[in-house]
Amino acid sequence: MIKVKTFTSQLKIFHTMNELEELDQTVNDFLASRGIRNVVSVSDTSTTGSHGEAIGLVRVVAYEEPGP
Image (cartoon, rainbow, N blue to C red):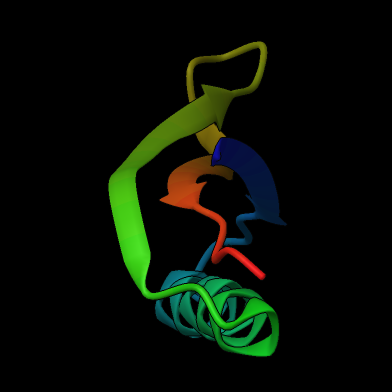
């Protein structure tokens, strides 16, 4: 069965690389803990503040859940 999971991360100036690495690790930990071997799609998009600045990141992962 194909499932979708959304992850989010707040972005702070001068900390973006660390936050992206933490988001990557969170996604990898989720996939490993569920035994997921087939990822169908990964998509990132940024969220913006009132002045157009990037303030967050949304990552959507579509994956096939392993059978019994």
